Image (cartoon, rainbow, N blue to C red; front, side, top):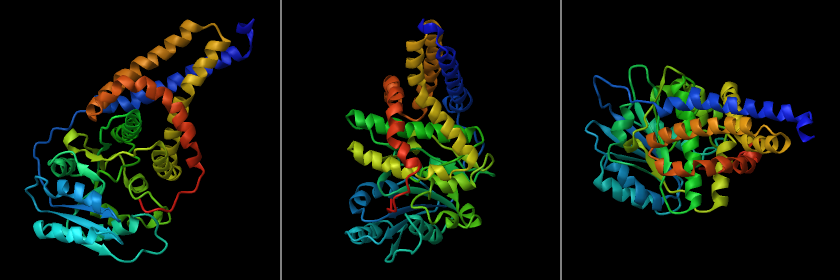
Length: 375
């Protein structure tokens, strides 16, 4: 009989272990974000702040998004440092026009690429070097703040011992299933780095919405240890310098930034390949935790299907899956609500199934060399 095959207890045991591992991540890490409450501060102070943005041939994005940064409601001294990195379009003329109306716009024009420094680390370093103030707030030219309070809310995340504030870089809501996939993957990434930070294990941030003290940058010699990497100016740098005592999160929906999502699957996959090529350089403990979560998530449905085929323990198997489904759905709803992505919640089961194919698509990035492009 099929139930007497030796493979039966192995499959059930493997499936139970995967479910247990998934529940560990949801209850130990992700639940922290679902129940997170913004700390009550007795005194709210606004510190001088430098917003740093790098752009190369992004005149259209600058025309569309830069006004949202320039008109922030921020009563204390602040500046916008715009690094125009070897642009060959009309960016320079556009920025000259902006400077006529906004005196706090500081444009840094770069006319030569740095040798042996890949990606945008050199222009970003020049922007930080040119910044006047200690508190730095980073975003990209293709991002726009979700509100005029973005600058105020992000800097409010700092406290006496806090040197790094992680924000949420969301993608704009558009029609179509691809948009939902992109936004769900972005949410999943944020779910992990926010939850890990709340658990005292911060491991990354996103350059679309990230703030840190300039002293952190100088003290750690900037990007010198990762200059050879095409990317990593956000996640690898934060992986090196963040710890349980110096990192905070800000998740208010008015503190988000919004970007235009990719419109084709191939373009999105190319973007994700580039991002994932840096994850292999994370600290070992972070890489292991991320890998075990990905592996356990990938194995849930293949093991469930195999166990249902080769055993008759239907009640046990569906009960284990149902427990995960209930806890997963409850925690995802809470975290999606926190990050203003609640419209994705009715789709979470389909996204859960999709994760199998997503990991297969992105797996090659683990061993492929990073592409040496600017963004």
